[in-house]
Length: 207
Image 1 (cartoon, helix red, strand yellow):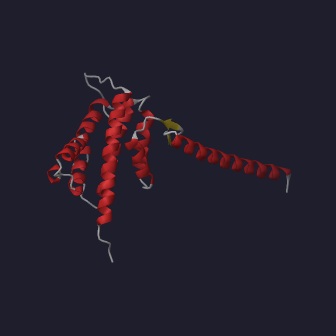
Image 2 (cartoon, helix red, strand yellow):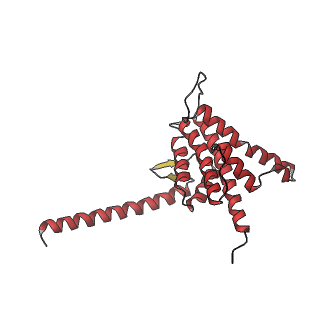
Image 3 (tube, rainbow, N blue to C red):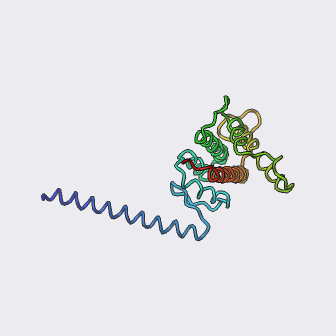
């Protein structure tokens, strides 16, 4: 073996060792972050602002091969402090992505207008989200308020996020406003995904 070949092999092995060490260190750090109630987000961001719904939602989407949802989840938390307008846009997009995936996977008909409200109506009807079917008044109030989140976040994206240009009225959007939109969207997203999973578990198995 020539000297150049030996050097190339040593260089390759050194690179492999460094990569393995980095991965091992990353795994250890993530475990430490989790014990401290911190969340590691792809790209190197450490978040302490992810609420319980956000952490639970992250666990739910981890097992699903849906890149669009993961991308919007990360974008929302990455931008909540530095770019709240982008974070609000991502909070709305994660709902829209989940609804579209649901319609596609359940082989439902897409509405003619595939905006947030349009796809939400299809998902809501198919999952049976109807407050009239809820007997407990307290639970009915909670669900009613939660279902109105879609309209509020959709309007917020239209008027205050980076998804659209602003008119005469300029929103003084702050991180706490973006965080409210994110946590609200993540709570609803988690409820939809868990209800979907429950629905699938009750389906009769084909022979």
